[in-house]
Image (cartoon, rainbow, N blue to C red; front, side, top):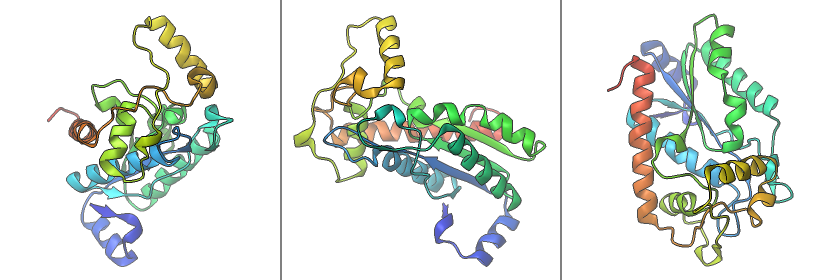
Length: 240
């Protein structure tokens, strides 16, 4: 792994000229995650995942974009940018990477609200670059079997595996969808996209109280394994 921000210009340019480089851009958010998880949770998790992927596959790791589209969490705390802003930032970054002769980019997303801005970004950038740039937007929770949550069992377990900044004594049960029909869950999902507090009441989707570091490590390992395979498939055009 080469962490871009720690590099020195002559050495970095030399390594790029010698080898076709693949860049990774982690994208997170700053928003409420209940009383027990920090507002940096999405950024913390996606940064760790991007680091591990980059280290194992020898990619160039860019600094994490810590701000995402999180307006749906108001009036709970969030620092948000518009969908168009995030799309523009990512477009500009990818174009800048291309100008430095880096033609393959993985955008690793860590926040649900960022899904729309990164959708079809690969097609747009291929057109802008006249087929010189390959961009692959991937959301990490698509690479695990468990149903994702927000500050619930999964996210809390992941944070326990990578951070000491978790206050389990403050963890509270949130919205539980067990026993609901798919239609009911879908309706709640639509409401949550508009107002997460209205859908969940306390800002938590799931139950974090039984989350463990061990379970978090297992989920993390699963994500890394599956995401690495996906990256390889993207690069080669066939499964490993």
